[in-house]
Image (tube, rainbow, N blue to C red; front, side, top):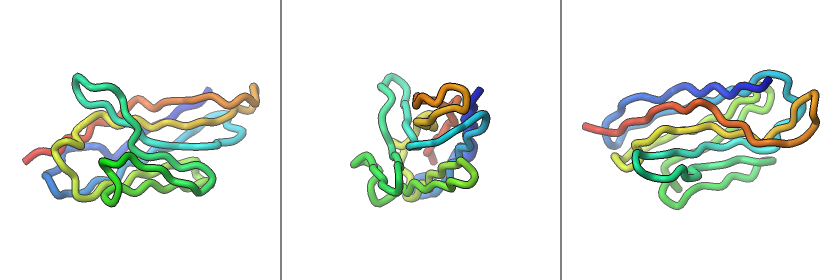
Length: 120
């Protein structure tokens, strides 16, 4: 059983900052990649940022404002969000591409999501 638990969401004013965390736990053999996606009301889920083997990838809309980082020892991924805009308002989901101890097959796992609201 694998769990991804996000934290750090909340309400922030435009121009403010938030830091999201996502910790993976359970019977994990190896994590290949971790990332963040978001879904705003009435819109499809979209990629925000990913990190895999030291290589990071960002959506154009967040480049220069968001930074993804990972602590491999803690199986944790972070998303530092600066200069937040109202259009960043969404539920943010953590994602991991990992293999478990019992199956040794890589699959995608998702967290439950954390709400980020940017509003004055």
